[in-house]
Image 1 (cartoon, helix red, strand yellow):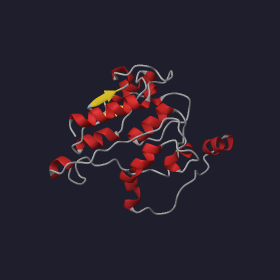
Image 2 (tube, helix red, strand yellow; image 1 turned 45 degrees about the vertical axis):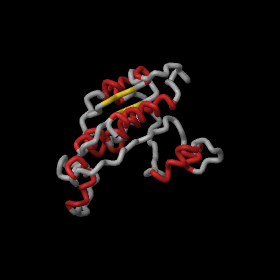
Image 3 (tube, helix red, strand yellow; image 1 turned 90 degrees about the horizontal axis):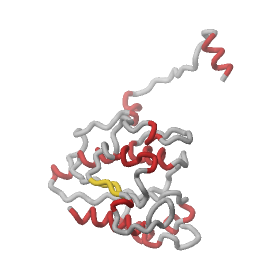
Image 4 (cartoon, one colour; image 1 turned 60 degrees about the vertical axis):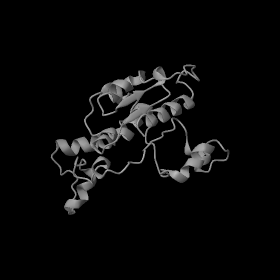
Length: 199
């Protein structure tokens, strides 16, 4: 750090990249062009497939039978894998739920500290996944067996194109499994109900 600072102070040349980049090399870093992609499912008249992004909180892949774990811990997920797109090369670069949550929802590299980005930046700029789905004719919902008051998750989610947001406070089953929330079956019932409202 000190040597880098000294080079700047003394006016020494900073590191530069002399290689040429083709214009297409930067496409991965450009925001998506809304409306310029393939026709939306609403425009084609085809029934869109239901898309459910399932995230297992604090669960390492090695403990699931879905990913070849030693014990049969996720038999239903393993059975559904035949009808699903399974991500099998994912790296969680931070173990803080709020920051990982924002990374998944908004494709933003998470801050690497012990503070919650949902609390510090509730109006964080970017295009969330929910907005992209809605622009393509989907209903969007966010369902969790936890309490969305934690780390201001509900306030973070509300302005981000979700048609329905549900947490343990909206569920008929209220018995807490732990201080973190209710049983996952309560959440699954709510997801099925959400889909059933307009399949």
